[in-house]
Image (cartoon, rainbow, N blue to C red; front, side):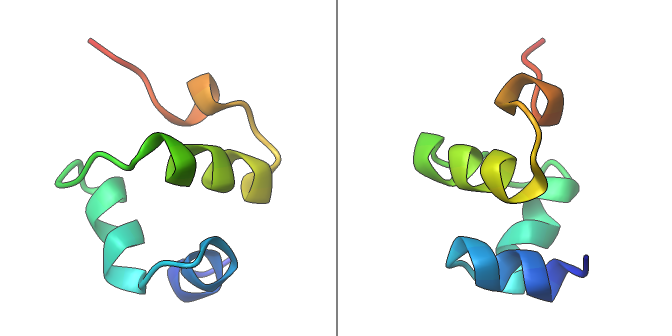
Length: 50
C-alpha cells in the first residue's frame, strides 16, 4: 500500500503519513487507531514509547 492510499483511507494527506514514518509527527489517538485498523495491526505494533 502506498502512502497516498493509506492517507486516503485514514482521511489525511500523504505528507502526514510520511511525517509519522520519519518520526516528525505523533498522530492523534484517533489517527493511530485508524492506521492500526487499516493496516490490520495492533496500535502497539505500530507505535512504541521509549
